[in-house]
Length: 77
Image (tube, rainbow, N blue to C red; front, side):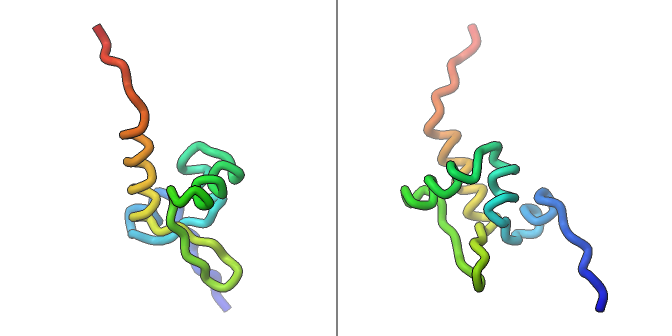
């Protein structure tokens, strides 16, 4: 049986695929604990496929955009 070539996180996001918890954490620059905290707070939507917890690319981008709006970026004088 042939193994499928694995896609990078960027390729999965571009293709509208799903990210694992570890992939999402690496992409977002946060820890797994923080990912699970965001899930439990309802800030991040996930789906379960068998035992795997997956985050859709669109949900990852929505989460990122919501975080950007939460952060006040000071203006440069």
